[in-house]
Length: 338
Length: 269
Ligand SMILES: Nc1ncnc2c1ncn2[C@@H]1O[C@H](COP(=O)(O)OP(=O)(O)O)[C@@H](O)[C@H]1O
Ligand SMILES: [Mg+2]
Image (cartoon, rainbow over all chains, first blue to last red; front, side, top):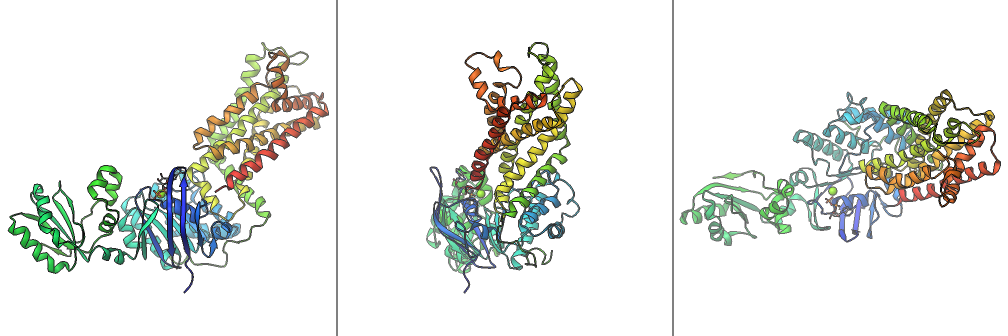
């Protein structure tokens, strides 16, 4: 088996008092996509900056494309592309000039830099805008230009730090398609995200990080299996009876059930969901509680993250309105609905 | 979207850094920074109007009040205004670098296998070109309003070289501030803390003899005074070699100290 394209072992990094990374281990197999999933401040950007040679770790070591990031940064730089959290485009240059600039600094030759710039502009739907200064670009166009710039050198390893944060849904989906294309072409990708849905869709494996540590690692399915096979989602018509319903159902749960009292929502991780559904209905019914919605679905990464960090959606909502939006419950895909 | 995105073709980035990259990469970066000026015609207008305004204001506002024995004030003033203007021009370096840092452009450069020093060498070179343009504009305006350099053509050119060279040295000092500033606005503010005393506590606008006795030795030791005196002498054909060499030594010395410092702090991860 070939050695991993990205390997981080025990990376530690502090900014003064703030310990951004508390010993992170990451591994990305060649040609695969690792999704690094975590909330704001988890340490995603710090990890990416160390791996892309921008920052030195305080402890631990890391290699990218077989080269040590501390000892041989030039070799790493020749193999990687980085698209940071904020588009690093030169506003005064046109889209084409931005790409040519990178090509020239990669020493691929002026002519090749021009050809490559045109190729990438076409691939990212920027041919028409290619002659305009980047300052006239929309947010989505800037992101695409930034990503294109990180691809000029045909990197074998690509770092994407929250590439879709702040994008509108259409631009996000377009970017996902590009990432999937790159992955199919054999590029090794490390992508950080706060969006569970994004990691679920794009990643071969997912590392969940929080507080500068990896708190879980595995395929999306493996992570979901930890929680139980299925989740029963229930909404009681009278929200005041939520707590009562939770007590009635508690012994059916594989792990701790979660409740949003105000909305009357209950989320119950279970084993053998289909068999248990009837029991749920029977108990609730005999207690005389009216059910407004009932569904059974595979656990989402949302469920996984919340169970791993022990943070309830309602707690997150109070502390961090933005995180609420990102980690908040989306309508589950009901496989069974009652 | 086809295989063009990722497939490795014949030309992949070359791996081994060669010393020649310092030159080629610096030229690339200078090209990029010059484009910024070209793309912002306003910058060019400001670059032109500001020094002209300085020349006219100083010449006509102070011209009558400041006594410069044995020499017409406009002719006395011009080398001072030139030096002040290139020093101010040097502050562009700090602002530009801080802006690049803030926007993440420097992060992009730092992840490329390029010569790291080129980002600073290219930027200071582009700022030098900008300063040379400004000095030419001011010379023309000066000559129109009564600047009468009576020295040799060689002295005239040497004087301009000293002026531009000092601006270049200031760019390197400025680069250090730009690399440490958190924002472009902070860089802009910080850079003027050394720049104002340097330019005003000097022989740029008034003869040092007119200053209070405590300030005189400071003004005399000020490199701006040396550079102004040297170029004044060269313009008028009265220069003494010692002053010219001292001014040149200051320029070389400032670059020798601040260029490596800036490059080191650019490279620090
Ligand atoms: N330059 C810095 N100076 C001080 N603290 C920082 C700096 N960069 C990041 N941090 C802190 O380190 C932690 C991790 O940050 P970061 O890696 O940016 O997380 P993420 O990208 O997951 O949001 C946070 O607590 C953040 O406030
Ligand atoms: Mg981040």
